[in-house]
Length: 404
Image 1: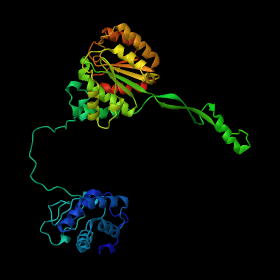
Image 2: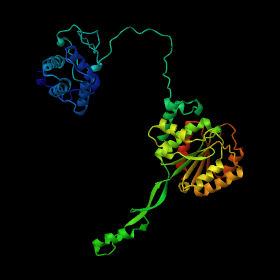
Image 3: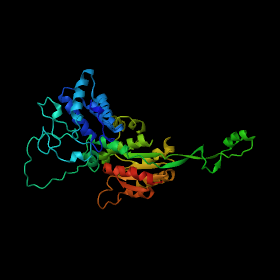
Image 4: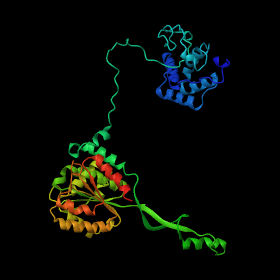
């Protein structure tokens, strides 16, 4: 066996392992050994994990990974001996760059394939460094300049700037998942719960006394504690009136992303207030949006923003507004008097931590909040943000951590 011949310490330096394995497997297939893609992959991984330093090591690595049947061992030995027996090509990292003349290929072709009618594999004794595809036809001359491949955006990047009314249900679901991935860095607030922490400025009396039992009731080691931070709550109110019909479904996806990733409380309103938190947390986005649409019975009707804000403040969910970030999605068209909305927004602002107003009209050039209701609510808002595309909705999510 050719493994008895002396070999250099580094057997295959600077060799493309994948091309080497594919070429050897191709030679085995020509002799009837069925070498699959999984076997070739295992051979490449074995060469990477344990690079062979001698021909016996290479032999056993190739035999264990490429041979499956006992009857195939003799054929494998013949192919391996034909390739590595004479060692005609020096095992040198630069040897594969020097052209040479082969008996089975073209002049100067160091990578010629094995002839199909060959019965003696020893006439092609070159190491299978690479495998080149067969030449089908000569290249045609062309006067055109070299073409540069056009870089196209992916599905999300291409749809993020499309207005809501031009998106179908599948694209809405895709962008809704994209919104969920944006909820990462989230603001926190200090809670009333305490936890032991060496950085705390408060002494935990009970824990200190409990530890002093080890030192004869002398408090030699003080246990300190600090308040535990928890994610700040988010409450979102979405206008689903007639003027917001094009944006309602997209806002549902934003509400679902906040409810799933940030444990937000979400409500929809037109002439009455409807809580959608339990509906929009369904694992299927299509089912969640469909159920939310069915639950809002007064959608695509009139708008009473002041009435619904007062209803939320007076309900048993009004406690969720305390210290929360409140997001209101509406174009500002309201049938209630502007004074009523200003009074309700003043109460909301005193209870909430921050108030963000999303307006789909705010992205229009030269936009000014001239609508009476919008002008009355604006002094009590910390941010007025456009929300006419999914890109702008993602900017709203990115703006929340900055309101610390």
